[in-house]
Amino acid sequence: MPEHDGPHIADHGLVGDLRTAALVATDGTIDWFCPGRFDAPSVFAAVLDPDAGAWRLGPDDPEARSQQYYHPETNILVTRFMTEQGVVEVQDFMPVLRAHDPDHHQRLVRRVVGLRGSVDLTMHMAPRPDYGATDPDLDVHDGVVRFADGDVHLALSSTTDLDVEDHAATAHVALEAGEAVLFVLEVLAPDEESRGCCEADVEELFDATAAFWRGWLAQSTYTGRWREWVDRSALTLKLLCHEPSGGIVAAPTTSLPETIGGSRNWDYRFVWVRDAAFSVYALLRLGFTDEASAFVRFLSERLGEAADDGEEAERLGPLRVLYDLDGDIPHERELDHLAGHRGSRPVRVGNQAVDQLQLDVYGELIDSVYLYDKHSRGISHDAWTDLTRIVGWLVDNWERPDAGMWEIRGEPRTHTTSLVMCWVAVERMMRIARRRGLPGDLTELAATRDAIYERVMTDCWNDELGAFTAFAGGDVLDAGTLLMPMVKMVAPDDPRFLSTLAVIEERLVTDSLVLRYDAETFDDGVGDGDEAGEGTFSLCSFWYVEALTRSGRHDEARLALEKMFTYANHLGQYAEQVGLNGEQLGNFPQAFTHLSLVSAVINLDRSLGR
Image (cartoon, rainbow, N blue to C red; front, side):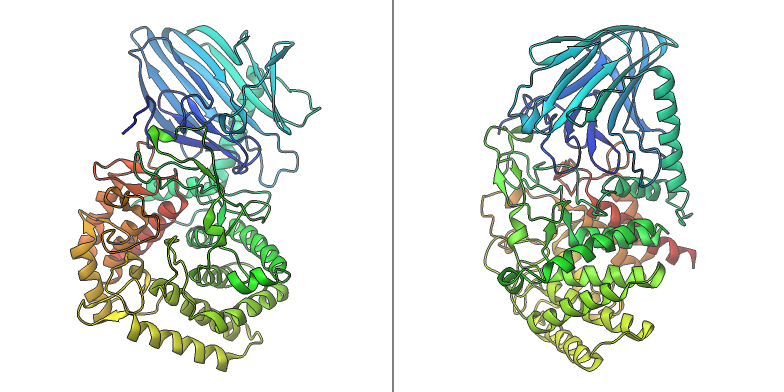
């Protein structure tokens, strides 16, 4: 299996400005950055190929040691380097001065501060726009280095001299204790002038950005046992919010592999209705309502557009599984020129799941709207009209086979989790209508709700196995059935659920980590031989903690939670999966994992409190 030098997935922290984000490795390298917005082409993508662009900054001493941490209660990332000659730190952040700032100016700021002794450092910025396909021409004027990436122009300024050679900018600095050097990469319009940088400006940006993050986090209502973990998850989820559109991306990266050397490499830089709806649920639980309002606005726009989709709406339903940040459809393609993370190919942009029918998204959507209506400002008449229309479609189509929440690429099936979430969609519509006195055919909704319930209890229950199964009439397990008491379809002490939990523990759980399904019997249609190496799904592992909590097994839930904390990276962040050796796998950081952590912790905290 091919190996490439460079940091592993977990060896990163994330900085962002609610529009895009950058990965900063523990060696001080920014090896992933898409200027402008999350789903734009990258200019730094060394995490996917060592020749696809990187911004390196660190000591010349090859024996230097590093540590990373976040400036308290913020998304300002600090990388400290310890050398034989002294200690320096790199402070990385993207300035955010205020919420919904109409004058937002996108910058990636790197401030290096000498702390002890004297340290020689090198800065080497080698941008490779368009996912590493382009060697840009770097122009220097008045000490500012400029280059273009299509319609996006970037400018690097510094408080030290910059040299340009071979499509790269470099600087060499000898930093004494108490001294600082600045590097600022600006994202500009084609004719916009660089604002440059000076110590006073960056100090002001640092303080204002720290104040923004602390002010946002202060809204959290969580004060329980695991506050540090919940705060970091909340801050991470906030970094995945695209403030201009209201969308929430599933992850800020593409094609970080689910199996090292394998081909399960997907683009998650889009708004998955499922992931975003669960994110809204987690943020609402913590008292953050602005993000929920923005996402409901994003969804309302998509639902309004769906009314004109014609044949596509009939085939795939009025709601797509995912959208880009403009609400468009990001079709999948492969980038053959990239080697992939540690040799994991192909690298993909866009996502084929956009052309799938996944019925569970209606349940997650309407459940999030129900919670928003209950805990925030309430939905509008137009939003209710849109919901009534899509649930009308669901009433006629809930029995159709689909791709399910794991987005299988094989033959559609009648997934248990899809039926469960269709039940949630109808049941929550009835709750909203009754609580608000809104118009709707409650008799028809009740009949559909009951029919779905009976289908789950008869066709999705396997007497011989003693468990709810992945598919109607099947014998394959699916950890997604752990959701059933969480969405209140069954009681947590229902004998059928307790039996299902026991079988899942026997077949899918290993040391608190949970496989989403048994890869030997569950054919997801990819068929590339990666199945044996698939990691455990951290989302499912936190669902397991919550299932233990709800079924009254609090000591076991607490132990499982503490074990899950040991699999986080050094900053308390998670990718999608955990490999056999404990390595983080998949796109990073993953919204699904962090939102399920929040939900599991809140419910366990509440139970232990009682």
